[in-house]
Length: 463
View (cartoon, rainbow, N blue to C red):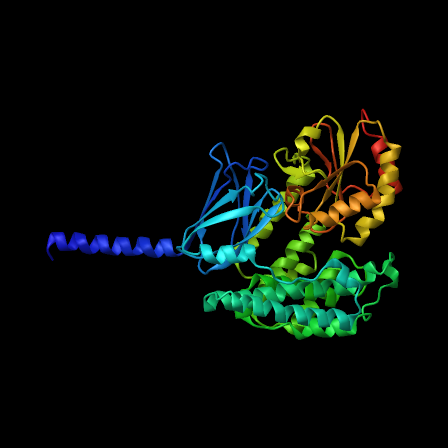
């Protein structure tokens, strides 16, 4: 073969491989522009989790393997914007000020450039119906009727957008299961919203129509399983269907969930994914305790080495937490009721008793009067009482802060609050205690309602 021809063939093959490699990657650039209230840019999805701290350039860049187009969430400060990324189709995003030169902190205005810009514009401008917390007060039939009406309205909205067929199909599925995901919370939230404050009065069969509908929407379908909204729905559905007794420990809770899971699902990949999720929940909820009897179930279903590696890394995180090495993140910004950015690092110099909570959490609300009493008891002493809300809707948080006249330092971090990520917080309320240097004293401090809390705080050196 002619030398020049051979070189040409080699270059062609090399170029082809390069193009193929590019087609299997996602490319995203984020330009913060003049937005200075947050430097951390986080991209999260089912196949990728990444954080980028913007320096003076105000630019963040993400490049990672992506086999199929998928949904992601772009987090900048309190803002959570949906994104749709496709392999080989770079997307550029820029934060834009509004007409008054300001920013909507919980949903920043973004400008998009790229081949799939139209889909991302649609995602961030769509007006789909969703259930509100107040709807949990509705009786079962009314709640289900409203869900069905909203589903029909959302379907009309999506079809009118004239999206390409594959994206439309994904949107219809995603919109459906996002709408129905709160249904899995209805049995408990209906109980709480109607003024009940004691777990002992709740019964598993109080909402039979809702439970029946939850089961009806479970599908043992590996194609459907690829949809993140469906996976989230399934996790919530199994959890509520397995809930029988509030006095069970986490080992027993996971065993109950596995029993329900096996009743409705047989697909190995689904069982493996769910078992990995359960193992993660168990380790996080027990602060690093071994799987015990769950280990045999885990070994039966989980074969993926990357999953096993993830679990080992999680154990390592808790070993670090228990060793006392973990420090308070001093570059994570939260926001006060006036919308001002607050850095926890600026609060160093005093002990910090941190309450991680949300307005929709019944047990969190139960602690409010006890927390107020604790704050009054330690008023003027060397300690800050800091409450960080995980609420997605700022207005709900503001309303409760004002209604309950909450004291201490009230901040909101949203569902992706850095403190929840740093300390693997999966259940609330959760209380943490830091020393004046920001060093973790207790990753799972006792609640304000526990008499031991005041005793522990009284014994702190220099309090």
